[in-house]
Length: 472
Image (tube, rainbow, N blue to C red; front, side, top):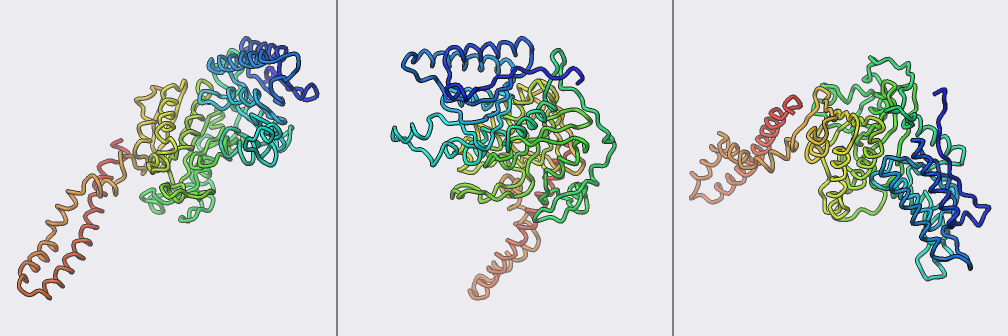
């Protein structure tokens, strides 16, 4: 706006004892957070620090002061305060924990941006080597973005230099900054017509489908069962304002590939836009024997569950959340269960329940299983669920329902089918002639399997029709 944006700036000074921290520095940081709380504005922290001052004249009292800052960060962020951190160099010990407390926990809304030569380490490489700990070839190998903080999701953005980091920060503010005294981030001017047909937008090439436009995803001719793989980012880009850039958060978080989190504008309104990857995504690491060989379409795995929960929490009380859902549920493999799927799935439910503001949940393809529970209207009165015509919603998909839940019904229908009845009688009539009877039994087995397959399809279809999106 014309009045500009106020923030409180905190900067580490590497020219003075490598940004070491003692009472005077900690008092200043606490005062800065107090000021931000009084003004109702974010803290912007350009962090470089060698950690607690190590000196012949001061000792553990420095750790106590670091604890005092930690407490102030916790009370500020739990009260809805935002701290955005740019890691501009090596951060050691206390500073990485401050960064974590400010930006990495479930309730925090600030972002953490890292530069190429920056790292967050608890113990520096030299000290680790000297004490016999496990280290890497350098500090970047212990806590840099490329190998550690990007893949584990603790750093949210990577910038090539300081100017680029500031640009990311301002793009973040374009979606999140609330002028003190106002309720939401300001609506942006947009020339993108509200009645633009998103179906005409281009669709990226995806293995397993021949879609060229977003409309093909929703076509009754080209995708009648809504089961073909598609590119969720193409759909997300189609529904956002074409004259505003989007910003993807946590784009390097490994194992969280199936959840996509954007800050975007829709009709000028800043929103947190969440989508679910709707094609199989190959895994980068060695695949455990008790886990899926690929990240399957429309499925939440533990890290993607955690990403979704953190995204919803980060937007809490600030801007609306829009979810474009092709969501068949949570992965229940042994690997996922071992990797805390229950805990992170539950965090989504908590995030939705605690969310202050509008959530618009749009079923664009399929919607089944536990996903229905954590995005249930029963969790939050501000949650609105809408569905694109032709999409499907049920407790379980039709095929698994027929095979597992209604297996007895399928068996009964198969046994009572006239073809199977006739073949069974033929076998019984040939009781004394063993060769012919064996051949007849083989025919009966093949016929039964064929008929059962058809009955499975019938029951699956009946279940799907009886649990249409209209019913939901």
